[in-house]
Length: 197
Image 1 (cartoon, rainbow, N blue to C red):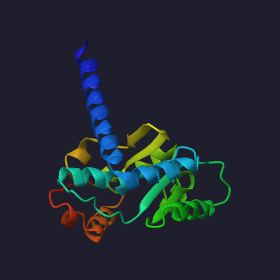
Image 2: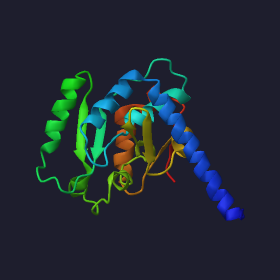
Image 3: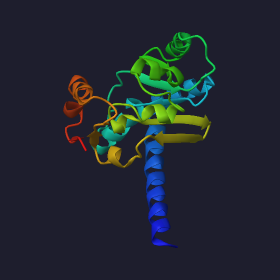
């Protein structure tokens, strides 16, 4: 195998292992699995639970936390360019809140979020995450069927497992820093490192 191909193969293998680690961590958390089941039942296109739902379970693991860190919200993303009602997400939030009232559900159609954010049109949910302020937040998971999960990351999984919070230059640095401070990530997970590269 040529060196370039071997390097790509090893990189992909590494990503697969990290992805499987995330899936196993999520599978050990019954409320997270239930949340994924309820979201799957909505049958929305290109739909995932993203951000802290996935990111936090990895950071908890890296910090050897026995009790999962409480979620501020549960971010559900989907991509439906044919959806005409800009408030349709409210109906989805209502369904999810009825199913699991203890969670703060936030559902957003990424096909229209570029307008609010002043970005170019997103291509899909993965592309939309490429514009999020922190690279490690741009990670998502979904349940494909009863036993199969899929996990995606706009910037790969490596930095998430290196306990980093990386600034995404597609957003203003002040926004990134405000979020880091407001959310108290460095207090909850003190081993995290801020990365500005």
